[in-house]
Length: 631
Ligand SMILES: O=C(O)c1ccc(O)c(O)c1
Ligand SMILES: [Mg+2]
Image 1 (cartoon, helix red, strand yellow):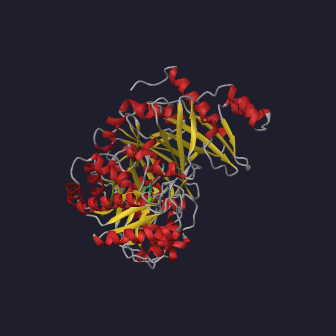
Image 2: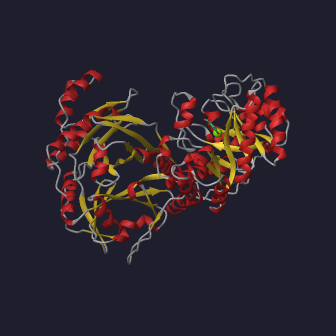
Image 3: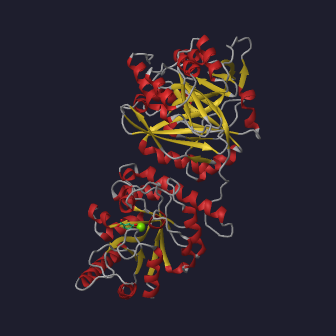
C-alpha cells in the first residue's frame, strides 16, 4: 500500500516537512500552491528536493472553479490550468487535483461540466498529464462524489479520473457504499481525513479541524472497505487541514499520520481478509486487563514523605527489590513502586520532573505481542540494562517521557514480584483502608498532544476513547477524554491544557511536563475507607460549604447522607440511570499531584466531571495556603 501525505498537513518550511515525511516512512506527497509561494527555489529545484528525500509527488493541488463557467471565464480558467501544467512539468508530477467549484457564475449542468473535463483531458493528454476531479462538500453544483463521478464518466477521457476525499463524503454523512460500483482504475487518488462529530459549517471544519484517521468520529473503515472493493490499488493520502498541526511539530505530525494510516489499513485487512495489502504483519490490538503497578521516582527524603502519604492511605511496604533501591507498597491489588536509585531511567526522570510517576505497568493479555504491535505502529521502544535475576519486561515510551511496561500472566512476567522482590519480613504495615484497585490514572499534557496520545493508546490497545468533555477550572478549560477498556478494568483519563493558569496547567509547567497528575483508587465502601484514613492521619481535601447546597438542589439525597458526605469531604454524582459516584481527594502533594478515592455504585461509568470546578477550586485554595512541601 502506497502512503502519501499532503504537505499542508504539517508545519514548517518545505525542507523540514519533507524530512519529517520521509523520516516517518511515507512514499509520496501532495504538493500545494503555498509550497511554491513560501519556498525560494524554482519548481524544478523543489521537485528535485522532494525526490532527494526519496519521495514522489503524487499530485499537485488544488485548482478550483474551472467547470461549468460561461465565456470568457471559461477560457481564463483553462489558461490557469495550462499554467499549472507548466508548473507540474517542471516539478515532475503528472496529476492535477481539480476540486468542485463554488464560483457564483458557474452554470453547472452535468453535460456542460463533462464537456469541460473532456477538453481539459485532451489538453492534459497532449502534455502527458492527468486531471482528477474531487467533489467538495460545499461545491456549488457538485458536492457529492456520486455527481463528480457522473461528470468524470460522461467526460469519458482516459486522462480524467475521480479523486475521493473521505472528509467530503463522511463529514456530510453521505454513504460511501456507492463507491463500490466505480471502476478502480477510474479513481486516480484517494485522500483520507477524519473529523470530530461537531455541528459546524463544513467548509470551516474542513479547513481547520480535520483529524488523522482514528482521531475523530467518522466511519473511515466503511469508506476504506468501499474503496478497496473497487480494486483501487494506488496511494492512500492524508489531507489533514488542522490548525493545531499547522502550528505543531512536523516530526510528530508525520509519525502520527503514518501510525493512523497503518492502523486503518490493519483494520481494513482484518475486515477484508481476502485483500492482499502490502502491509507489515502485526498482532491484533491487545486486551488490557489491568494496571499492574505504578512507579514513582523520588530521592531519599521525598520517598519518606511519599511513604508517609502511602501509609496514611493504608498501603504497607511489603518488599524490596533484589538489587536496587526500589520498594514495593501494596494494598488490595494495587502495587506502588518507589524508586530512589541514583542512576538509570528513574533517576533521570527524577532529575527532570522531581518526585513523580515515571513508569506504569500495564497488565495485558500478551506482553510480547503488545510490544510488537506498538513497534510496528512506530512507538519508541524502551529498554535499559537489566541486572542479575531481573526479567526483561517489554516497554515503550509513553506520555511525557514516562515508560509503559507490559506484563502478562501467561509468561514468566507473571512472576515479576516473586522473582525481582524480596518480602520485607517483620515490617508492621498499617491496616488496609479497603482500597482494592486502581480505578483510573489521570495524565495531563498540552492540549496539542491529546490527539497524539489518544491515537497511540487506541491503536495499540483494545481501549476506546470516550467523547471529550470540557472541565471548568476557575482559570481556564481543561479538555478531558477518558479511555476505557470494554470491561472498565483499565481507565485512563487524558487531560489537555492550553494555559499555565489552570491547576492542571500549573502542574505541567511546574513539573516540566510530567504526566500523571492523579491516581484514583477504588474502594467498595467509601465511608469506611474515609474513616480508616482519618484515623491514619490522612488529610483530605476540604470541600467548600456551597458545594453541599448544590448537591441538595441537584439530587434528592437524605439529609443524613449529605451530612455523612460533608463530614468526610466526599463529592457525589449520579448518572440518571441508577448509578452513583463518590469521590474524595488528598491534599496536593509536590508539584500538584494528588490522590483520589472513589466508589462506583450501580454501574456509574463517568468521572464526576460536574464536581471538577469545586475540586480544582479547593485544590487551588489549599495550594495558595502554601501547603506545598519544598522540593
Ligand atoms: O478547501 C478546499 O478548497 C479544498 C481544496 C482541495 C482539497 O483537496 C480539499 O479537500 C479541499
Ligand atoms: Mg481533498
